[in-house]
Picture 1 (cartoon, rainbow, N blue to C red):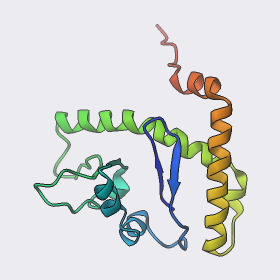
Picture 2 (picture 1 turned 45 degrees about the vertical axis):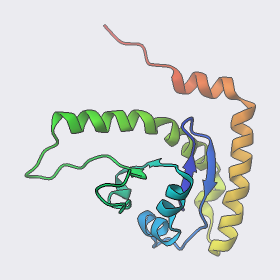
Picture 3 (picture 1 turned 135 degrees about the vertical axis):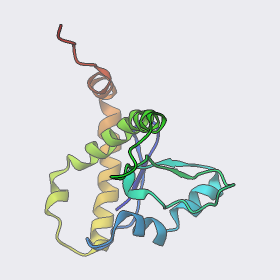
Picture 4 (picture 1 turned 90 degrees about the vertical axis):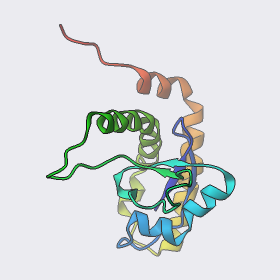
Length: 151
């Protein structure tokens, strides 16, 4: 299942559920997600599981931006490490949005048809967004605090 959030981590859209054996990148390709994002002029920042999803060509603006991976014989350069750090900082609120959705314990016990799971998760999307909107000060304070440094 694929979900899209805004830059603050508010869940916007969830794809239809697929059987558990379907990988994330396959689901995106099946739903033509990059084409739909390109049509409306949007982009996405994704994790390393989506490397190679954006096949827009060398001259096209990227629709899906992912980090870089290192190989055994080719370590990351300093610039690529800084780029990955910047992407991780941008993705942090997005991961908080996914975590709010994963707080529903019923999602860990679902063993039913994908059509029922899709309806359940989309209902939980609405409830999650309502719950997060109800407590904006709590969530912003918790996610924005930095731990104290020990000297």
